[in-house]
Image (cartoon, helix red, strand yellow):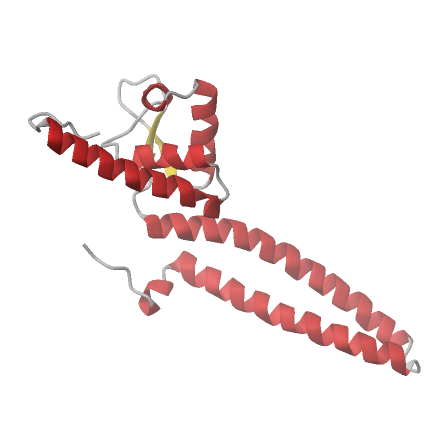
Length: 186
């Protein structure tokens, strides 16, 4: 955290209140990333900290147990929202916020959606193969042919969506998305 040295009490109160409001907002919206309010607050506190922190630093600042902080840090590392860094002379693990929220979104979205996408495409392809086999072996049954054609159409539409989603994820991961929707610069 940047030092408040040299600032009067009123200035410090305004800065702390403003930061707390942003940290609360971050914490409340971290459910979009599948994390709890406390982990969101942990990230918010780290975001306003100037430099790397240890588990002990954050546990003390937030009044949380080392186990809770450790679990929260591990979750944030897994989401690539923070990273473990090396600190010369430090025997404790140091953590630092990934400051690029665009990259945070890309990493989270890509990790979650690519896993889901692969599972769904696999299920659709397997089901399509079964339905096509059923259709071909019962070509004389108009009712079955009609129903299988309907299902094939629906599943094919879903595959089109998932192939589009894969291209979207690729555009996120490659940074190509920023050609269409540029980042705002400071």
